[in-house]
Length: 133
Image 1 (cartoon, one colour):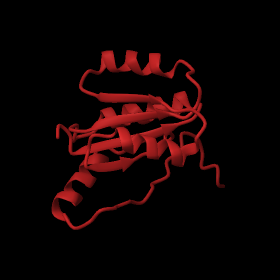
Image 2 (image 1 turned 90 degrees about the vertical axis):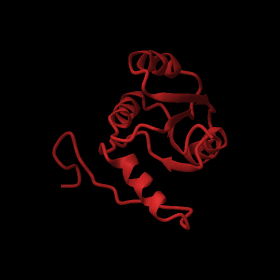
Image 3 (image 1 turned 180 degrees about the vertical axis):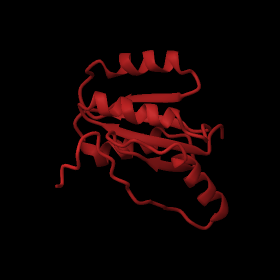
Image 4 (image 1 turned 120 degrees about the vertical axis):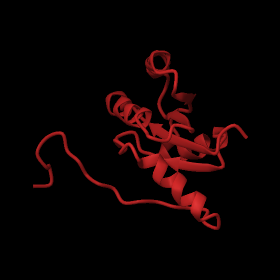
């Protein structure tokens, strides 16, 4: 198998935040993964935007799937069927991943072969003052 790790990102009409997420994944310290983006909306120009981004960033192995109107859960399920990795890491389209994000999962699964599912805490960061008050 070419890849051991696949990162899947479902998205729905959220181009700007998705591109920030993709950029944060491009800046990972561990880059041996495929990125599977599932557009959960009708084709809206996202594929063109991602194709251009990948031409400028050839180190990113990106798979684009257009699978409209099935919700985030359905989009993740579709992403898992296309993913080549034997470890699936799910990321939301509005997340910005720390450069060690993927490497943390790699290290964990390499040390704990018996584990089949893992998750982690979210660290909230805001571009503007904390909206929760």
